[in-house]
Image 1 (cartoon, rainbow, N blue to C red):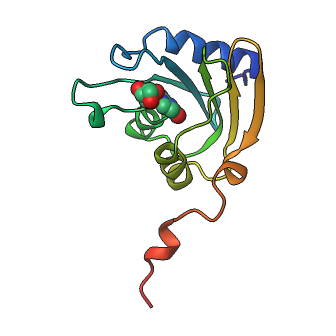
Image 2: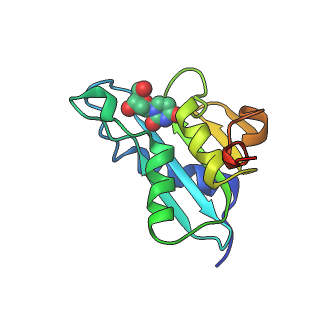
Image 3: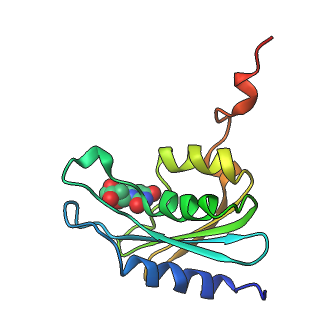
Length: 134
Ligand code: THU
């Protein structure tokens, strides 16, 4: 499976953002997650009238992939139309660290793009190693 360019991955995230269920916040987010084998899993934020049940675009994309047995990831693109480029929230950073450690993170809006890594965005994070009993 051919790998996408950053531009193409960001484009897939914009497409996914079009499905955003963000009627409560008005803040639409799209994500496109690339697996090691080149498959792309997209997500948008899905909000609930019980606000705390909302799921971010990044986790929707990741959960779709995990639920199909995919366990190795390369890049994730996150897009919003906000004036400032939006990074993954803390909860998404934790879950990405659990299932996609070391992943590259592309954050974009209509005019700007920031390339980063989860290692940079989530230093000294909690992980399964802390669960080990002595
Ligand atoms: N949101 C995401 O989808 N991803 C993030 O990383 C930040 C926040 C969503 C959650 C909620 O639907 C809306 O943006 C406002 O917080």
